[in-house]
Length: 182
Image (cartoon, rainbow, N blue to C red):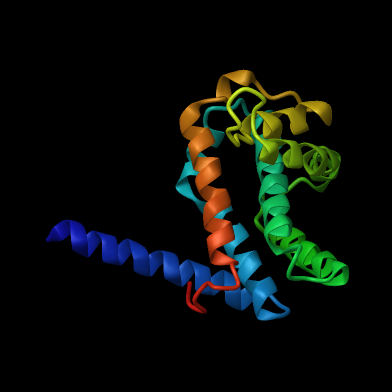
């Protein structure tokens, strides 16, 4: 009984945060939805927990690599529904929201972004032996290739599963079949 109550309270809090991000964003509803989804992921307690596993110098690098990943997923999910100009507008709106997040480093983001755009399509192809999609090593590689090495110790399967779940949630939320209140 109490578990159900706590679950409903948690759900209401998430809905409230989502709507706050949605309302503070500008542009078409789909763009505002994308901004809200991205910001909700950055605020996820999991991100704070993972950040604690990095040194103080590595934390902003991981966060920028993760922001790049989130933006890439958003673009990937929406690229067939939007025109290139709309993708550029959406990208700008999400990037602006990242800046207001408070821990954004535009210089680091700009250096990691091209590597993310290069490596993430490779991640979607899956491993040569298993065919499994597992983007975590390539998120780390994007930061490392940009000149910001991150330790390989973070390649924990729980983190990898979370990232796969994030990809699915973003795709489901921004699907043309998603309910308006999803």
